[in-house]
Amino acid sequence: MPAGWTAPAGLFLLAFFLAPLARNAGVSIWPNGVAGGIDVQPYQRLFADPFYLGVLGQTLGLSFVAAAISALIGYPVAFFMVRKAGRFQALLTFLLIAPLLTSIIMRTYGWRVLMSRLGLVNALLRNLGIIDRPIDFLGGPWVAVAALVHVLVPFMVLSIAASLQGVDRRLEEASRLLGAGRVATFLRVTLPLTLDGVGTGFILVFMLANGSFVTLLLLGGGLQTLPLLIFQQFNTTRDFAFAGAMSNVLLVAAVLCLALQARLIRRRGVRA
Amino acid sequence: MRHGADRMVDAVSGAALLGFVVVFVVFLLAPILVVVAVAFSSLGYVAFPIPSLSLRWFVRVLTYEPFLDGLRVSAELAFASTALAALIGVPAALAIGRSSRPWAQGMAAFLLSPVSMPLIVLGYSLLFYLSVLGLGASFASLLIAHTVIGVPYLVRTVTGIYRSIPPDYEEASAILGAGRLASLFLVTLPLIRPGIFAGCLFAFLISFDNLPISYFFGSADASTLPVVMLSYMQSQFDPAIAAISTVQMVLAMIVLLVVERFYGLRRIGAPA
Image (cartoon, rainbow over all chains, first blue to last red; front, side, top):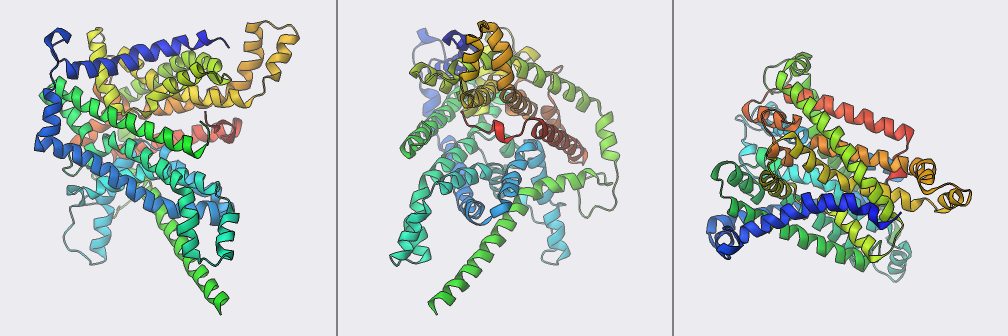
């Protein structure tokens, strides 16, 4: 079909996707119009004020932790799926994708049902006589981490499984025949061959966690992240230049992640 | 001796891996299953153990005005934005689907890019942009925003399926004397219908579940169901949210089963 057929979609996204992001970037740099000159004060505040620097650190740190835990949990699951599951592989894939069918509100609500003071976990612990007063899980950051991992770990598993599927088993056999043990073979042959899959999954989870809003809003347990702060600035403080600067930083982080991912995929030589 | 020890290690590590995967599946499903359980609770608040089963919360959902209004807005919005995204996305996908020219690849990357942007950043930037254009928080703004996030799903599934269909059919149609439009409507569109259908399904579900963007754009007369649910959740913690989430999940599963039955999900899984 002629190239012109891309015009409606291209123009629509130009007008309602690219232009708003560009305008937002512009407003954060020239808050009083281009004639008013460049003002980097919002960025200065973000990168110099210890409070906002802390928020930035918490945002990236939380995403890093979520991605790292997802990788640690996801690798064995992916390994099981590709190498051991056999006819259960389809079932496991279904179980991985099924949570994606439920709304984000439902999953977030589910964590509250599990972890609140009157929730299932506290009720179980009390029945078993382990505790006599409910634990305030929601007051800390770990429920948010668990919920993030819950939402994002399927992406990690699928990414690692894809690269495990591509591993040439003869390389592992060769390593075994040459006298390496199971563990050595895994650490020196299998794992290095699948690091690209881990990397792609890691970046994807990190990127998605950076922008996550609902999970943090409802389960944050006192954590302050950039998406929450953007909403606060928008809703109450109404400091638009500062909110614009913060969303720009999130945007740049996303673009960097995308570029990294594209590099990884290109290096792997799979679909350019 | 060496072999015996190896087999022992195999059995133990295999059992450990299996156990790990079982725990993982429980982790995936628990937050969803507890919500379904709570939906049938007879209690006026969320607590365990559930003393007896009741449908009162389903009745409550069906008679609570704001939920019904939200549902109506969400359904209208999801239908309208999906239709608009298909209208502009399908022609674009046909134009770039089989081209390997650099412009086509660049255009494909551009049309897919909204999916990788943090939604909160997009919502924030777009709201201000549209306010300048005089739209502000309204159904029209919601429609524009949801179309932006729907286009990538249409483009991805349609290019995927269009690429997998050999050009022979369209060539045969042209040789047999069909004009461009006749070929398009009689040959190409029927062939790519599963892709269009799947893309529409994804776009619909994504729109229906979207919160970060709708949260910015919600106004008194146009609040989507997730926004209404969120504000309900912030003021009270009773099983009503569980009931409505359960209904939503069952509906999504039915839709998916229907799609699987008529089109087969495997056929549409081809990555763009």
